[in-house]
Amino acid sequence: MTPTLSQMICFALYSANHAMQRVYAPLLSELGLTYPQYLVLLSLWQEDGQTVGALGRALQLESNTLTPLLKRMEAQGLVTRTRDSADERQVRVTLTAAGLALQAQAEPLSACIFDRCALPPEQLAALRDAVTALRDQLRPDV
View 1 (cartoon, rainbow, N blue to C red):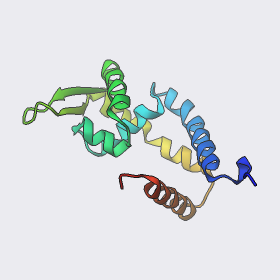
View 2 (view 1 turned 120 degrees about the horizontal axis):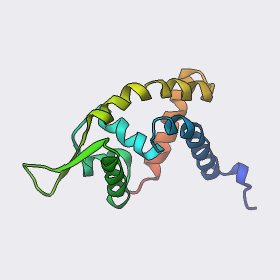
View 3 (view 1 turned 120 degrees about the vertical axis):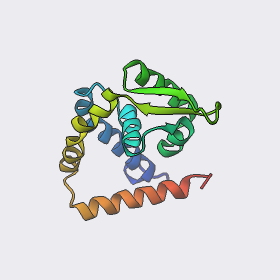
View 4 (view 1 turned 90 degrees about the horizontal axis):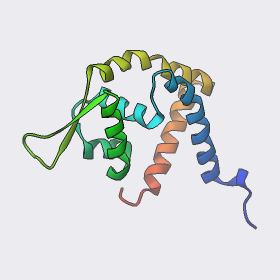
């Protein structure tokens, strides 16, 4: 018997992802950001000056997706992309003053998302860990 949509883990994850992005959209819109741009900024706020390759690994994005995203962010004045002086094949992505300034403005987002999830912190952490473990199990390159 074919399972129904509500019985499929893939649909639960897919629809939860869309719901989460719908919660983020108006919050990020106020900052002039898309969700993928926010993820790039989160990674750079954690460690500025990453290579495009390192960012791609951290965000699990291919360069053909990441490069146009970084170009748009550079045009917005949020990041700069420069060739690495030690290895010209590498491109480093660095936050601008405007990109750094967004960190303080974005700080309240986590609390808003946490409130919308309406789960105790331990349950939310366990859910995150379970989804992460599932993702890692499904990835062929891990």
